[in-house]
Length: 156
Image (cartoon, rainbow, N blue to C red):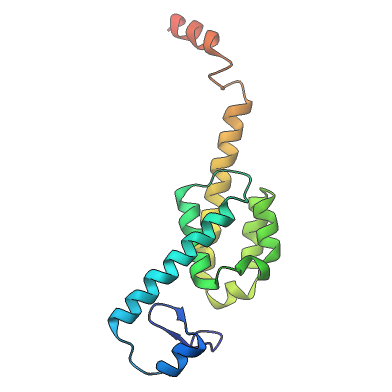
């Protein structure tokens, strides 16, 4: 049983009604079945994350994408329906607010290591987005300052 007393098997696989009949809690599960579930669950989590990433305003980092796959694997592909504020802030590009919401949840109380990992990925994603925005909007933008850089190069 998981932390919510839901029957699981293998690597965090939530058992369907049919699977519960085949593998009641405490029943050994063959390794090939566990591997099949894991492969299937990861595939589902990846597909869900890909769809969710398409709704975000910025191109994600690989680390953030992996973290979102982990969220979908752990919480299920509808996690954003329960964690509405976190999802809303992510979609609005308000990453600091989203990271705070992750900690303001029962999810954090149940699995703090996983929420800390997701929070870290959100904040690193935010930092990358802000850095990218800074360079694209500032005087450091090389596209707008080719002449300036040539003059500086000539001086040195």
